[in-house]
Image (cartoon, rainbow, N blue to C red; front, side, top):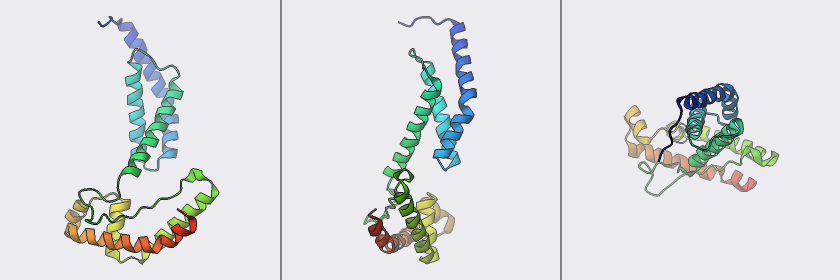
Length: 190
């Protein structure tokens, strides 16, 4: 059985939602952008948080402390996005090498202190040097797939190079980078 809702209650609730969104939009957006480097992704998270807020405000149990609720949900969405990215294999399942060859760059998080920040800096520097040492065709495929997120199919369409050739180029790049960076991984026990 649904209880009738007075129209003034709906208008009053919508007005409170609008006021909260207007008041918190800039501050919450800045918070998310500081945590997420990709501005498009940051905007997506912001929109998701406000959408969830609006949905929650229309439930019988209302949101008591809107600002705290918004920041808690934003933090959870940021964590969810990073977890989702970590769980995704570097090779897409439909484009993966038959031997499952992949390079796992397990960078220590910034929050792990100065030693982790130093290890991260050194690893990134070594990675850049190793990437520069690759043949151009291998470097381009590796960067396009791993860093830019372009699928092998998209690259094949853009370059008129067969998917299998692109897979082979990436595989050679991964094998070289893995061997080239092994010493730094061992040094920092990453």
